[in-house]
Length: 297
Image (tube, rainbow, N blue to C red; front, side, top):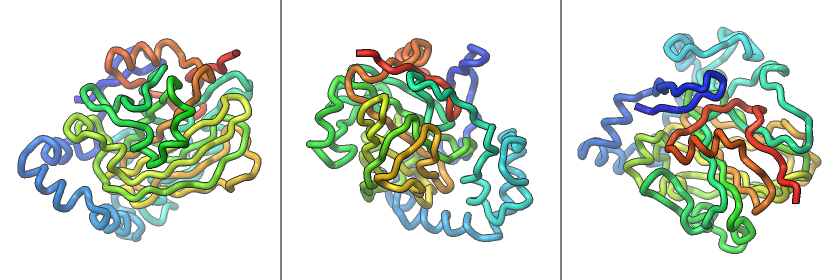
């Protein structure tokens, strides 16, 4: 059972997990763990499923998925009947006004729809994955030098469920460097998996970029793949001027994670998010939602 905090209702809610029974078996039973290590975590498993989700035969999965998880299609840019395959639906675009956000330069917005955990004054060698498991930023990006400037800064972890809008965006104006790609496995990023596999983020396929933000300093953007994520697609143009809210890229099918690292004294995260993280709960946020403010030095 995964419980998260809903900021709007100020209540805790239970997450309906896609493939819940399968996940529990894979990550909690001896036989399931053997199957995980032998097949599920491998690239070929996710690649084959991703190829299926690109075919017209996968289209029949769309309507049951919408119904089972009560996904609102009113905000979608096109009718679900017009999707050619399941991946088209999964990486769907939204209507222009579906995710409003503040243009105030001091307001920090969420780059995605997801469940957020926030950590301040981070030790780069002991970043929390989940209670009992930590990892280092240098291991996450395979680069010691680039990680040094983020010591004692802020780390935001956004977990995207298969039911979420799966495009990720820029949180400020600025420019972004070219993407660095790191090969890896395809473990699930669901809390069920995080509790049983150490250093998942450092083991999975991932991509990272440095975003030179006008108002929040340099920011590490890290996208992490997961089981059945066929691809991480970057749609931005390196080196070109970026506006707040612009699309950076999207995930194809599967649960996924976006992690942001801020330098020290650049951002102040909203107290309710920090409090829920401290109590062991993720906070549900939408792309464009205010999650903090600029730190005035």
